[in-house]
Amino acid sequence: MRFDIPQLTDGVQAGDRRALARAITLVESGRDDHRDMALALLAGLSTDRQALRIGLSGTPGVGKSTFIEGFGLMLTGLGLRVAVLAVDPSSARSGGSILGDKTRMEYLSRDPHAFIRPSPSQTHLGGVARRTRDAVRLCEAAGYDVVLIETVGVGQSETVVAQMADLFVLLLAPAGGDELQGVKRGIMEMADLILVNKADGDLKAQALRTCADYAGALRLLRRRPQDKDGFPLAMTISALDGKGLAQAWDHMTALADWRRETGVLAQVRADQARHWFKEDLRAEMLALLTRDPELAARLATLEDAVARGEMTPAVAARAALAPLRQP
Ligand code: GDP
Image 1 (tube, rainbow, N blue to C red):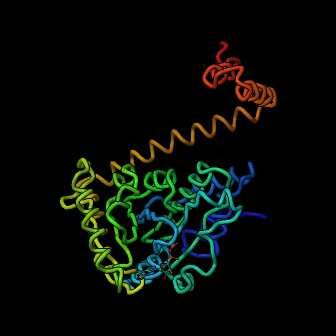
Image 2 (cartoon, rainbow, N blue to C red; image 1 turned 180 degrees about the vertical axis):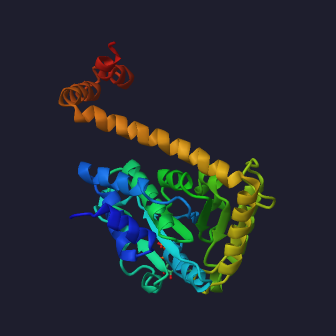
C-alpha cells in the first residue's frame, strides 16, 4: 500500500472519511517504514481542534453497541460529528476484533456524520493503545467533536482507555445486590459516570436498585481533584428505548465544561501526555535495542536464561544493557 503523506494530511484535515480511514490504517501498520510515515503525518497535523474524548467500558452484553448507536445518533442529530474507536484486548486471542462486528451500530455506521473504526488486531495491549491514541489524534484533526473510545470491561484495557479519555463512563447491567462486588474497586475509581442500562420493562426496578447501590458505593470513594460537585454519579438509562441518553449527555458536557473552565482538563491531558511519552520512550528503546543484531542476540540469550530460571529478570535486564553502560 502506498501513502502520500501531504495528500493524506490535507484529506484528514478536510474531514474526508476515506482519508481518515487510510490514515488510521497507516498508524496501525507494524512496518518500520510505515511507522516513519505515520509519525510524519501525525507531526504535520494542526493541534487547533480538540474533541471531547469519552472512554466507555462495559462487559459483553451490557449494551455498549446499543448505547453507542442511540447515543451517537442523538449527537449527530445535535449537529455533532462523532467518531467511535475500540480498544479490544480480546482481539489478540480471536485474531479478529469482536468489536469490529459489521452488524453493530447499523444506523450509526451509515450516518455521514459518524465514523466507526473497529479495534486493530494486535497481539498486545500496548500496541493497541498506541494505535488508538494515534487514531484519536487523527479523528480530532479530522474535525470530530466527540470521540468515543470503547472497551470491553476485562481488566487492563479500562486503565488504558481512561488514560486517553477526558471522561470515563462505565456501563453496567441491573444486578442483584451481591454482584456489586463484581466491579473492581479500581474500575469504580476511574468512573466519572456510571450508567445502569436496561432500566426498562421487567428490569426497571432492579436497575433502579442497582443504581442506588452504585451511587452509595461512589459516595464512599475518595474525592479526586477532577471531581465536580455531585460527581462521579450513577444514573439509569435504557439504551434500547433511548431513555436517559440526553440526561447522560447533559452530565457529560456539564462535567467537561467544568473541567475545561477550572483548568482540570488541561492538567489531566498534560499528565496523560507525560504518561504516554514515557510509555512510548520505553517502546522505542526496546525497538532500538532489538534492531541491533548483536544486542538482539544478547537479549534472546538472556531471555532464555531467565526462562530456564538461571537468572532473575532484574539481573538479566541489567546485564542486557551492560554494553551500553560502558563509557
Ligand atoms: P454489548 O455486547 O455491550 O455491545 O451489548 P449489545 O448492545 O450488543 O446488547 C446486548 C443485548 O442487550 C442485546 O440483546 C440488546 O438488545 C440488549 N440491550 C441493550 N440495551 C438494552 C436496554 O436498554 N434494555 C434492554 N431491555 N435490553 C437492552
